[in-house]
Length: 239
Image (cartoon, rainbow, N blue to C red; front, side):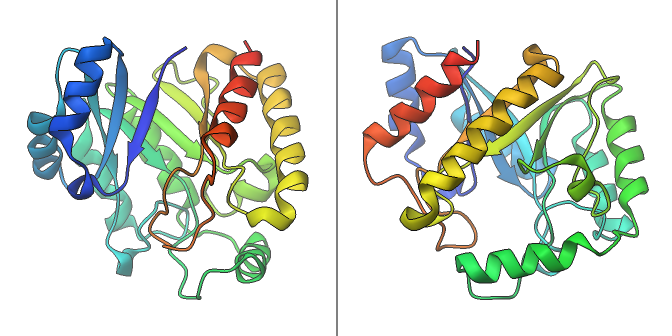
């Protein structure tokens, strides 16, 4: 099983301890670092990479640009992906950073509204990823929703005919909080099983979490290590 970590706030990590842990355990992993430029990526790469750790780039935008990439991003923002050509890259396809105060209800309202909107630069984003993948290994990060719900917003990418592209699906069982967790977990597991059936399992991965809050600052996180272990065991059972 391949182990990949996303590091959204690398400045908050004690990388000396991380390197020591991985080297001591002889545990291999890839770590994708959130960065706004190729120059910033190389600064982190020199600090983190060792024999057991490979570092990839996770391009992000400014808050004003939407932070994540989508069909709602401006072309000038989408063009920033080109700077990372030739690297291992994670492209996070999500709706623009919201202005609301995070809560389950606000999150639901926000996404329901966006379902009916067309990202005007969706096709441009697709073509940019197409071009990038010619010489770049690209992980496309997506929500666990149907293609029809994601495509209009430009947050779906078909990796089937692009040999250098891989699909990662967010299976965040903690995101909805304790009340809705049983329902969301059942949905996520069913979605994952279907994704494996319909796609090439060697080019599909699943991200688990959350072990810490992200940019929204109020996302649900694991409260017990056993919760993470349960999710890991499920993904391992997929083969």
